[in-house]
Each structure stands twice: as structure tokens, then as C-alpha cells.
Length: 257
Image 1 (cartoon, one colour):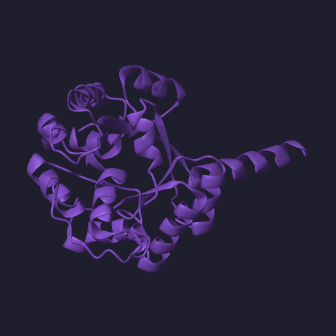
Image 2: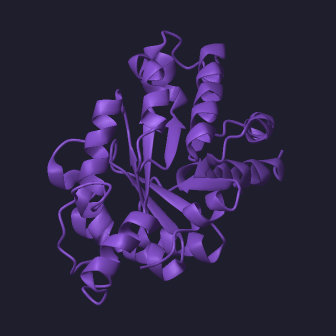
């Protein structure tokens, strides 16, 4: 099984920067890997993705040697299982409101002794059945990461309990939905959100795991890293395409003014 860049860097005390692929196109994901991107976030929460396309996106990540992290809501049993069997390096699960919910997530995404994930063993993550079963289960537990998102006010007091759950690798503070839940929609740098991040950093350090959140701008990210955030989302293919189009058109218009 392929080693996770995210886990390797985190375990070495390094900071991970994550790009989001809104379009979830295999060629873009593979290209990102060749250009040095460490992890690509594919959102299957807000964006519907055909399963066959998702499988090809994950395969493109393996080809380009970039971690593919799939965000998918916790619901049916196979919602989290399928991306893992495709070979996703990690899962991001939104709106984790309680330690009880996170324990169930770990039960469904980790093999014994951490959980009771169902085993097929003939898909992409097992190199299509070429890894012996016991070795496959061990590697799957060690080389895939689980990120749980704190996005609701009721989840804040659960942070310490969530951080203690064996099998959780990253607790991610989602400022957009959390700002709504706190009654300050759009105020992503609100003091209560900053305090939640600091609380999460402390809880993660105490349990040997890692805190993540969104990097809103350069100076803000510098502060996050100094405080101890180790996983930061920093942009998307959509944003870069939009910026490139606007700048190109602006430069063209300047030529005729």
C-alpha cells in the first residue's frame, strides 16, 4: 500500500498544505501531484461525483503520487468504505458533533483492533488483492488518515473527548459552518473560532494527533503555524483558474486604455 504523504509529514513534525479540486478531474489531480502538491481535497459533500469518476480521481492520485482526501458525510455504511477501497489516502468527515459519532466512524473505517471495518481486499487500496490479508489490514490502519471536522457549536465541548479516540488523526476546524453555528456567519476569524482552534491544538497535542483548519490569508496562516496548526487548506483549482482569467483579462484591457 502506498505511504501517505500527509501522515509521513505530520509524524515528522512538518506542516501539510492541502489544495482543493472543485472539478475533481483526474488529469488535474495527477498534474497537481507532478507539481509537488502533497494532498488534494475532493469534496463529495457539496458536490455529487459519479463513483466511476471518483475512482479515476483516486487512481490519478496514485499515478501522480499525491494523497487524495475525500470529504464525504457520515451516513450509510458504504459511504465511507467505498473511497477507502478505491485507494483514497484519507477521509474528511464533516459535521462531527460528538465523540459517540466519531467512535462509530472509526469502527467503520478502521480494521481490528481499532475498528470493525468490512473487508473485501480485492480493490485499489489492497493493490487488487496482491497484499496478504493481515498485512493489508495493518497497512490500511497505519497508512490512511481520518480527519473529523468540527463545524457545530455543540461539538466544541466534545473536542477533548474526540481527540482521545484511537484512530483519529486530524481534527479540522471548519470556520465557515462554525461561524454560522456560532451566530457570526462569515466572520471566519471570530475570536470564538480562534479560541476553538487553540483548544483543539491543545487537545491534539495531548493525544499525539494534529489540528487542521483553513488558511484564510498569508498572515493568518503564519499565526496558525506558530500556534501549532499542522494541516492547512490553502486554495483550489477553481480559485486559481478564476484568478488567472481575471488577471489575464485585466492585463489585456490595460493594453488598450
